[in-house]
Image (cartoon, rainbow, N blue to C red):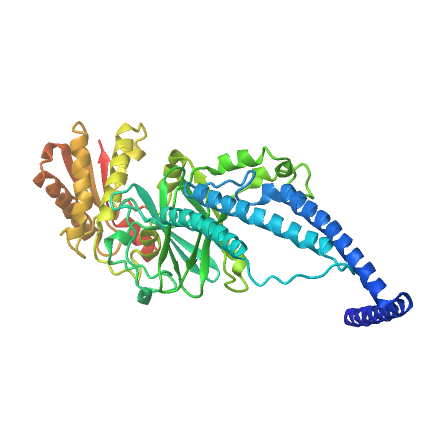
Length: 497
């Protein structure tokens, strides 16, 4: 039905135009062609002037009306250090092109009026004018040279990479349909190596987990955090099709090309809170964020920096939007401390882990820190139960009391703790599950507790501060009804006496 109505409208408009043409022909025949030509030229000239005025008023009024919603004007000044240079460059370009736009349109419509057809005017044909040629060649050349030089200076500033010793954060953004995978370096400050051949469902960006720099790298969720005033280098890649890394408020825009890593360097200079406070000064941003809820939060209160994909990368293109929060260094550090290594939480110990039989340097540091905090809390606690700690990372040969090589890291942490608190004495307790003969289990647990005590004394701990006891299967943590529960019951503990 809609198509039929559209077709009928087209036919009707065609008929009206044909009739207007016929009326014009009849008028020309009645009044004379020259008189009609004179009247048409007069009205065309006058209407051109009227259109010029209306058009120019519309241009300036709409520009003023919407200036606060355009990047670079009103509250939307650049939130990055380099963006100021870009905004200046665009503004100066706008000034020059605006002058040309204004003058050419005034000349166009004024000439349409001034040189309308007249019986008493004869056209002049000027084949060449050296002065005019010089003017309209030299002036654009000078202006273009000025703009290009400024543009090159801005380009060199914006695209400069970070120096080898420069204090900066490097993060990695990998675009895929339809998501950004954002990777931060761990405490070592370095991003690990990648190899696309290692890509799997678990290892989506092909991290090479034989590279120690990958062990502490962090893959963040839907919200990104950056500290204000800190230079950031973004390594930009794509897995499938062309994407575009776009942070409009920071004037950051760079293609993410499969197989061709790119980068962008910028320094945020406004926190999210700062930007919101700029927006709240403007009336239009004090309107309700949700028109259906006039008492709800205002537009400025709901503002967030966003990461968008500026390429039409498929049907789910819209879902690549991510939130970016720029915060103080203290807030960033607090958020960063809560982030966990992707490798240690998602890959470590699984079939894809190439380091299953190794204790990693990063794990040694983490365990040492956690053990130090635990023994300090136990020493200071008044609760007797809190004074018993399990040595989670020591193991023995199956059915024997020989410590495995990897157990030394946990026991070295215990040596450090004993040295840090020279006043404490401890009981080392061995426990087993209920598999096998109870007497044999007790004897084995005693031997294992003694092996731990022997390790400590060999490293300078006074034997008088140690007591080793084997409890066998008499003190289980839970029922020995599953492999998992039996594994929990097989443990070595120490209690601060």
